[in-house]
Length: 364
Image (cartoon, rainbow, N blue to C red; front, side, top):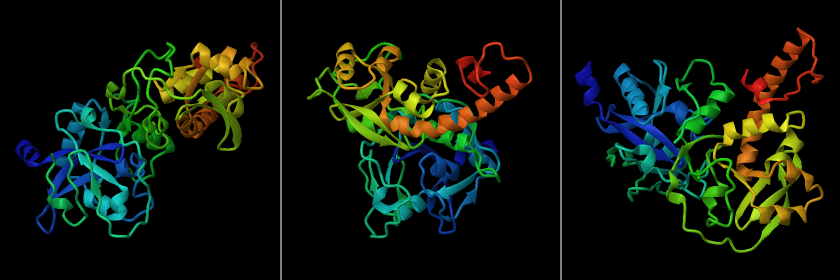
């Protein structure tokens, strides 16, 4: 058994902004084909959703190799006996030039991953025959010769990545997305003010993280640049985020929104303390404090500057849009639990049924 496991070739591949382990298997044509876990592609990379593709059930040795690779990369995930694998060339064949593929270092796959600032189209139905682009190692390949190609941080929580008979829950899909996505987290003290002028504006910061995600794999602090002023000043612009129009803070090419604005617009029955706890959980280090100069500029531009006195923390607007449905689902469960708890005993605090007033209630 051990010799069989060692004989199976494996590695890491980056697909768009998702890092994926693979194993090689010789199929009917005797060509070595890279096989990747289908759930990671669907719910991590958000590809092949609602698309029929040929899959192969992972053998016990293949499953062990995938699990060992995740463990060595400090991704505490487990694939079970029901995990299905899909050929990498199926992804390239489906999306052609709308997918970016690069093989990663075996020694440090997460460290060698690079965030792609331009979002690749997802769930595309392109059929123009354009060649797929393979970035990172500089190789280009189309779906025809893909099987012959040779291979060259942070995780929120534990998740069983198995392709269970029942569909994955929304929370499991979200966690899977978060765990394998390449991010552009700027390292630093979470609660210390970060001067927004002390960095160059990049598309990476606007496109932070993968779809519907919170904490993701970091592409390290290499993205930190020497101090450089962002041209222009802070601007306040209206923007629609889901069902509400809210003020957006534009600093150069980077767009932010106040955490307190999101709370009041979408989670008014959640206390600021509890909401900050949730935002930290889902956004992690990508929550910043406005500088005093920025605060003064914004106070002159908004109708209700008092919100800045309560909380001057901001997050990138894309993060805000992605976390809203996640927090909504989570709070719905919390409210139900709080309501049942209050119905079973007196309520001396005067808190309304279902109201989330503290981070303790969220964690309980």
